[in-house]
Image: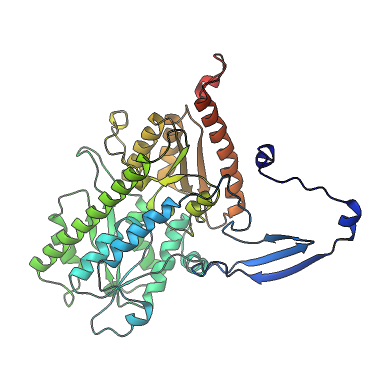
Length: 432
């Protein structure tokens, strides 16, 4: 309707006799439109006259329509930098190569903490000379593998992590499943803890999948602390037959950490360059969340791609610098990622053409503590919180996205026109 009002949809006159005599053909097929997609959606295709209607796709390929052209998918920009940093590690194997190695293969599941810290993990084992097998991108099959193996009701990202670990069990001699307790923080007095389920994911997988203890490399990592402390922790985690010399391990840890930090700097530099070239009149969506739902296309239903197809300029929060934001009003923020989400919300608030979208998952305990703070901070602007799980579908997601787009665009047009009635509120808060 919005497109029709703006005269971007052509009006078609219909003849009732023609409609009555029209034949409708129905076929079913499996979608192969994107060779890189492994969903294998079963499509229902209706042909009537010269028109076609396609139903059943998970990605929204056949439903979305852009207003004014497709945008760049900045989630894929982040993904390209991540994959480049991973590949630079060397010693990364394909599935076929994993079974032909003289040295034991280390399997690293690309889920949960690895979608943020995978560069560190991959470079560390590569520097130590171990061949590394990364689990593939999450597919429906891999997600289902996790769902059917999990033994307690947890959030979807943890279920998917089980699927990645189960995949690697048949292909790698050793599994790298660290207990990541906390992450680096901008200020020394911050706490920086990760979600308890992320911290304990190794214990859950070991129990649910009956993994022998001897196959797991499981250091307890306090990444917030001095990197020198990691040497002893990793040394203790290796089995005696695998354990490298301490000097070799220290060198590998420091080199791998340096590459991880370089990756983080590249993200911010790339984001700054993108932001510098954005027209202040153009609305920009800043998408917050956790790495394991922001950067897994199965978990977020290809959210970046959906927004790009709709012509929406949207940046994931890894491309937005927020470390300098004042957190004095959140002195006891427990969660490391929660603090980053709140910082990003503060920058959204003070940037006129920025609007907030937060991706979360059903049963996310950590997000349940901070969502009301997120809404409170952005009370002067419209914001959108999307909860997803294994039952979510693109159609419902797009309905909310398109409604939010209309609100954002209308508000942005009013603000830029400078023709507002003096008594008309310019913010949601002022409107009451």
